[in-house]
Image 1 (tube, rainbow, N blue to C red):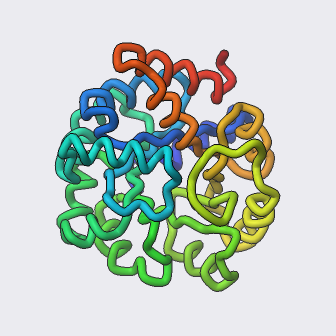
Image 2 (tube, rainbow, N blue to C red; image 1 turned 90 degrees about the horizontal axis):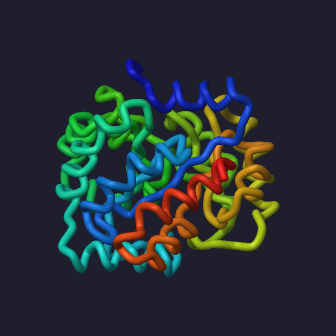
Length: 265
């Protein structure tokens, strides 16, 4: 894959011998302009890659914090096309930072798989995480994305069967997103042991980088999971920081929090 930012970034993380950090933003929360400001600021603060989502009306995998951010973005009338335009607008400001789209499958299917994959390529999106699309059913999306240099990043949970893990490892590229808990997103006091068990099962099936998300909210969590994984993903804790920040302090507070997670503060 030409100009593979995801591969280059994970190679850099390995060469530097440090924990990787991926952060999550709900596109359009609290407004689209905030997303345009946050992406370069958080990359500068220490985020190795940024997951950006399309706000969705029925986010079954998301806990109350991310649900709230999605609701607020939808209240503002943010559409999938608004999100895609925002990604295209911000791409040049973070030329080496992977941008990974996290989305439920309904907006993708409604948009049209080939049309959607084409827009991701145009906008400089490096990969897509179809949250509620089982790997066994991801073939058509893969066929649309692969020729356009867009990675399909599978999402696996502690409840994933060995067969599902093998299927995901076969169709996935870029990296594999391992969910540390069974249930919804949200901050937790410690990282679940089930997440580490899952990493061992997935590692037996693939050489792709592994990331761990759901429940990670502090630097010590990032360090702990990266003893086994290549990067930690932080979503709810960052969104909570944003929810609690006045708009004029939003970017600064979010950047400071990411710098803490990255071990820069």
